[in-house]
Structure formats: structure tokens, C-alpha cells
Image (cartoon, rainbow, N blue to C red; front, side):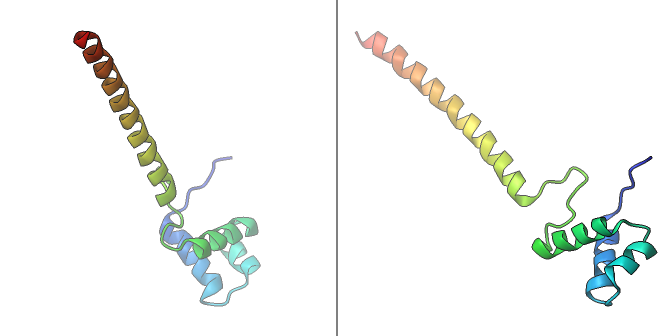
Length: 96
């Protein structure tokens, strides 16, 4: 079985069927050939973070992107610290 992929727009429209037009979740899922659980998950995701909802396809949520950026910054700062430690040790030897 091939896993189907849906666009962000399709997901938002599916959620709007239920939330704005008043269609029952079960009916909307049948009409769109979806499992009810999938539609309910989309509804929950859209309600929790409307702007960041359905970011898939390689795009990261804002929190994950920030964590990734912070990890890179930590690695850079550790490298700089190590260079400074070596330089301090070198100059301490030269001074004696």
C-alpha cells in the first residue's frame, strides 16, 4: 500500500469542512476518503498551532528549527573555547 501525501491546503480545507461548515467528522472523513483518526489529528494540530500546522515535507516547526540553531551555536562556542584554551596554554609556556 502506498502512503498518500496531502498538501497543506488540502488539510486546512478538510479541517474547515468540520469547523466552519459544520459537517460531522465521520461524514467529512468518508467524503474525503480519510480515516476519522487522521482528520481528528489534523483538527487537533490546526487548533494547537494554526500558523505552524502541517509543516511537513522537510520543513521544521519553529521550536525544532530553534533547537537546531542553538545546537550549532553551542558547537561553535565549544570550538572557540577549545582554541582559546590551547592559546592560553601556549602563551603560558612561552612566558616561563
